[in-house]
Length: 339
Image 1: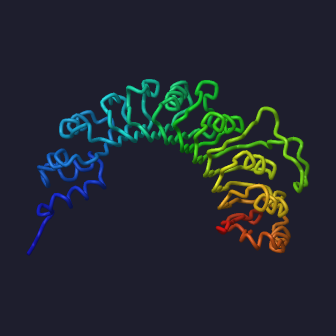
Image 2: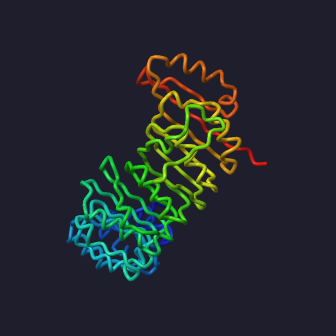
Image 3: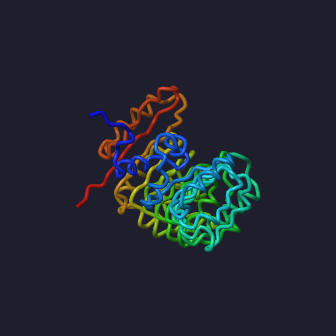
């Protein structure tokens, strides 16, 4: 017997609808294919996902067809959408929102918000700072992702204050050492942090030999965080002192991923031995994927690395880059066995 889309049972149709936003459902299935589609969605109390642009006619049509209280996720790139109508929204994405300063993240607005994504392709401005400040202060927010096209992220550190709700922070832009320090101090319940950083050395007192040398941070930097469990850093030109001092302050860190660019002089076997066997005993996994600048001595550097028995034991490898003769790639995925 020949069947068509019309013949699918309601449960199957609702399952299919879960893969589309409301605007995609409207443009694909309504009214020619499924004229009863939105009645079905309303009656089923299905969670809805909205993607709204500057097409006012389409937006008005969608609002007239759905129960706004079923919307749990919204992606907005238009400044004409009143946010106060979304009482049940748990995830909000603002993509180049024309008037960032109009966002007022107060408890009475978006009371169910848990995840916020801010995407901004313009230059940093007062409006961006204001949006970030208000986002940090939202009492129910647990996940915040900030994506800026600018190569250098300057968070308004003196304006944000503390957030006792954010548990996961993703920053898709570079930030400074002082910004990183601010984030650790301002987010006491943060569990997952992923960001890019341009760090200077955290210690001017550390010598070239890392074994047994205490790392003393400058007075302006104070990293100590007990809740962070997962750290993902894209790090440009770190030193062993930077890495050791940072991880020393993260007492409950379980997983750490480092990628970016480093100098060949930082291929210090004694440091990695001390870090894994003494300093970071709570770490269950360390993943490394770093480009290594070598100059003209790439073959000798790789030979010395390959002869280090500890690097072999923790399965760290140094491979030639396919793009540049003066680049090597340090890769590793050490996992501590459970006792």
